[in-house]
Length: 212
Image (tube, rainbow, N blue to C red; front, side):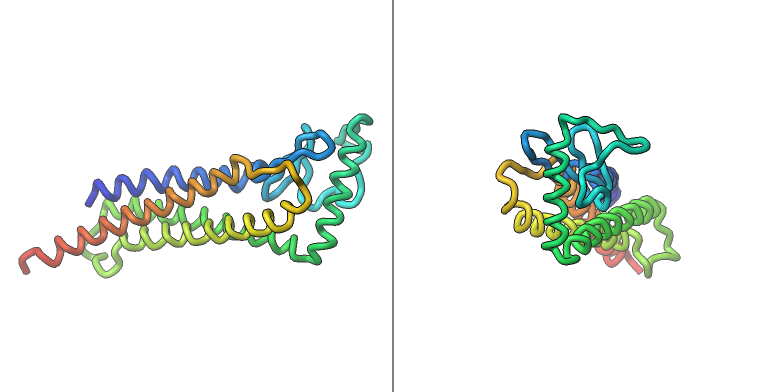
């Protein structure tokens, strides 16, 4: 039983770290625009060495301002990029904002469930007879499966909207490493849930077979 919980705890730690990294980084998708490399995440989009919030500089090219450098030779790609983002948001009619918010919310919920599962999984090593009605391995497994479900929803929403919306506008684009980390985290949290459910079943079999 403890070997299953140890394996599940390892998978949970790795999955939670990957979830946090995937949520926080800006490399969910990358593409080329007018010869310039661009990439974006759930919170920011970047063109060259400059990054902006998803709601920043929409509809006009960033110009010289406080704390912002302006390179004349980058004016054209920046202008085209911001003009494309304006068309994107107008055609989305509010759906784009909901798509960002839903993906962020599900990724955060997944991270919270995975973290709670780790806490419950650690406590499962100190299972006391007084807590037999609330099995900690079972609770940890449920939390890890909930984390898997939420990250699956986030990735499904992001994949569907990105492929159907961006695929028609860019010929040279692809998903990047932050997006891939999300899928790896999904597998890790899923296996963590499997391990803890196996530990729960072993615990129940031993409890039922023990002499009364």
